[in-house]
Image: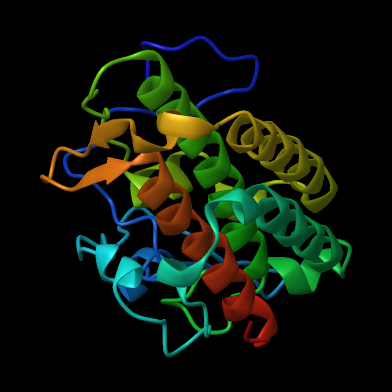
Length: 221
C-alpha cells in the first residue's frame, strides 16, 4: 500500500497474514474484552483473527446477507458502494452508547463494524489504484483485527466515522467509475495466492460492506 499516493489515510500495512476482509471480522477473544462503566464492551488486546478464504463469494450467493456477488454487474459497483455508505450513515446517526455496545463479547459493535468498513473502502481504493497503475502487483498485507485494537475502533466518534466512511466510499466509487474497457481485466495478487482482475476485485469487494450492514441491521439484499 505504500507504493501509491493518496489524500485519505491508509490502514496499517504490517500484518502477519492476509485477512479475509469478510464477515469473520469482529470475532474477538472473549478473554480480551473488558466491560466499561457505560455498559459497552471494548476491544481488548487479543482478537481472534479470521484467516478463512472468502473468495468463495465470487462463486455462489451468500446465504446470510443474500448477495450474489458473482452476478453483480461491474459497472454497478460504484453505485452500490455509495448506497452502502448511506446505510452506514443512517446506522451511525443512532445513539452513541448503543453503537458502542457489543451484542456479545466476541462480536463487534455497530461502531466497530463501521470503522472496519471505512478502512476496507480505503484499502480497496489503494489496491485498485495499484492494479490500474502497475502490472500485476502484489498487495501488501493488512491485519484487520490488529488494526481494530490499535485504532480503538470502539472508542471512535460515530459522527466522525460517518464522515470518514462516506468520504472513503466516494473516493472508491469514483475510482471504479473511471475504469473502462480492457482495464477491467488488469490483475493484482494477494500474498495468500488469490488473484483478481479489477472486475472480480470489484465484485469481491462489495460483499464485505453489504454483509456487515446486514450484520448490524439484519436486512438482507
